[in-house]
Length: 228
Image 1 (cartoon, rainbow, N blue to C red):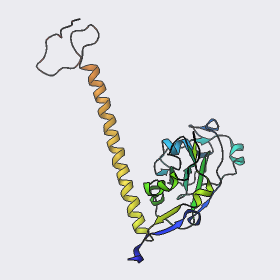
Image 2 (cartoon, one colour):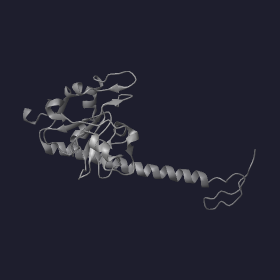
Image 3 (cartoon, rainbow, N blue to C red):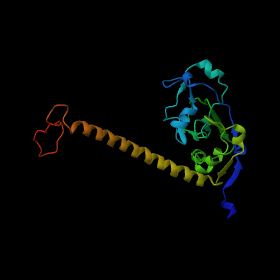
């Protein structure tokens, strides 16, 4: 049924390309500042498909003058920030801005900020543009030997697919978001078990030349034997 078919359009028709800045990591601080800056290194290694500005640590630009000179566009919720350079095929990884209230946030070094020209449901684009379906298009466009990068011109020619119905977009975004929440929960449990194991390894065996471990199963009281 064509009425329910997903629409396919060139990225250049769906998005406007915004201005980024080129501030290096040395210009950024983890503490505080007047504006925040999305560095491509963080997109590649830290940020999820959606970047919740209210809960995620995004580095700051401390210098007011630098902010005045950045000539970058202030980002809005729903904007996509794409890392256009990487040492491998993670180039093109991107994140969707969510949770912005009145923080000033800019797209920084080696990024291409994109603003959709129409409404999309929160999270849909972030997940779609990191999907195999979309990223396979980017692979053929990457240029370079040691460092791979994607040009704005090539990016505009890629194809974006989406369902017309915002409710379907919302369901997709919500479902994948729920999976992310589960992953975070299990990650915390995993970390706790790893810590528990480490503690057990240090307490269930006698220290250096001692004969008794700090922790024992009930019913065992004999000294441990020590031999070469």
